[in-house]
Every structure is written in C-alpha cells, then in structure tokens.
Image 1: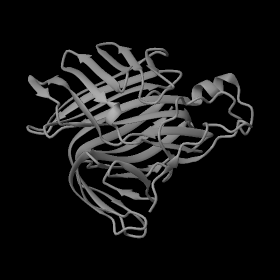
Image 2: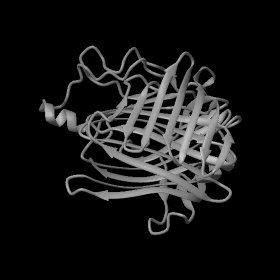
Image 3: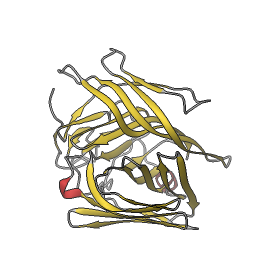
Image 4: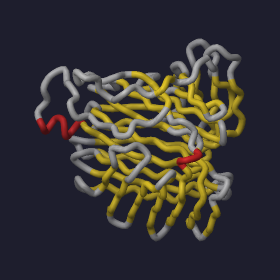
Length: 326
C-alpha cells in the first residue's frame, strides 16, 4: 500500500489537457482556463455544464450537521441541517435561488456564501482556518475549523460523465464553535469536520451514491456513479490512500433500512445503519433532483490494498443516493 502521490504542477498540462489522477494536497485554485474540450462548446453549454460546490459536515456525539453552497451556473442552491441523535430530530433548511445567490471560490476550502430567502450561509477563509456561519430562525451555527491541523486532503481529477471534474476531500478537521438548534445549545468542542470542494463540467443527467465518515486520524470517502471509483480514499493516521471500487446496496423505498457497501473481491463490506434522513425531491420539467442523505453509523471492514484491512465500528457519517438533471 502507498499513500497518494504529491500534487502535479497544475490542473492542466501545457497543451490544455486535463491531468487526471489522485494526489495528496490541495491545488491553489481549480482553474479551467485553457481547458481543451473534445469539441468547441458554445458559451451557453459551457455555462450550463459548469458546477461548483462546497460542503461541510460536522460530526459530534450529540449531533450531525451538514451545510452546502452550490453554484449551478444557471441557478443557486444551498442547504443547512442539524440532526439531533437523541431524541432523533432533524432541523433541515433548503433553498433555491437565481444565479449569483450562491458563490463558491475557486480555492478549495476557502470562501463560499449563500444569500437566500430565510437562509444565510458564510464560509470565510482565514489564516490556517475556515469560519462557517449559518443563520436561520431555527438553526444558528458559528464554527471555526482548524485547517492548519487538517491532514493532507485528497485531490481527485477524473473525466466524470462529461469532460473533467476536480474534487477535494478532507480528512477529519478539528473545530470549535456553537450550535443553536431546536432549543438546544451545543458546544462543538471535540467534534470533527470534513470538507468537500468540487468544481468541474458535468452532464445534464448526473447520478451518484456516496459514503463518508471521519474521526481523528481515520476516515473514508467512497463513491459509485459519475466519478466511478476515482475518489475512493481512506485516511490512515491522517494520510490519504487510494481504495478500490465498491457497490452500494440499499432499499430506495425504505432508506432507513440498513445500507451495504461491498467490493467485488469481498475485502470491503460495510454496513450503514441510518438514524435520520435529510432528503428532497423536485421536478421542474427541464431540471429535476432526487436525493437522500442518510445520517447514521458505519460498521464492518474496509479492504486496504496490500494490507489486511481496517475494522470500522460505530463511526458516525453519511450515505447518499443522488440523481440530478441539471
């Protein structure tokens, strides 16, 4: 087994072709200027297909928080939710808006903002850190993520389902802050965050299944769908390593039933037990989405190339089933 290689000199080579692969570290910027398409797109197609988002998850023994700012080009979307594990209660907010209502910096794990009716989200870059603020009458969060203590993130660039897509995933990030939700005030000391910055060109019809869970020194990110197995990574002692492909098995009619993630060779077999659901569905005709992001715990075994594998027990995280026509 070997850790991910250091970053290449840039996202594109000198001829404008994308450098595909998986590396440890974060690019200064995800800059597609000069990208060579297989055919020359019109400006409208390039604008419609370019998607960018930043997502923050916070795992705490009492609560799981998910926050996302999504710039779709032709539209904007953001959500913030907090799932209280005892009692099992979800406070979930999701808003759509016009172009410009959501902004995501080209720098991974940097600035992002959403200004939508009833919901304000700010992610503010600071030296060695990221401040995350969410404001709604039912949910208020103010947290500071210590990026200086973040293990090396994974930078993955793959053809995806159109031209090219770049995603940065972090391991466990320590943080401090406060959450006010459902009449509760929760000190987030001791929680860990994980980050996802994604930027690229995706097809109108994009689908994925995704699993993510992190604790100090350990974590994983798994996906099946538009990126295939490109972004499957495990962090061991804070160092990212590549993992192979997995299949997701779950009952779409009953997403609170256990989910399974398995590798074809059988070395990976995870069982995910949902505790709560953040979900949504909409159909505008020309665009639609259906997603379920389940919050719960992972148990089982992750097959690690060249090693016996790693046991997982009661690790808090999420699993998602997502389909969009965007």
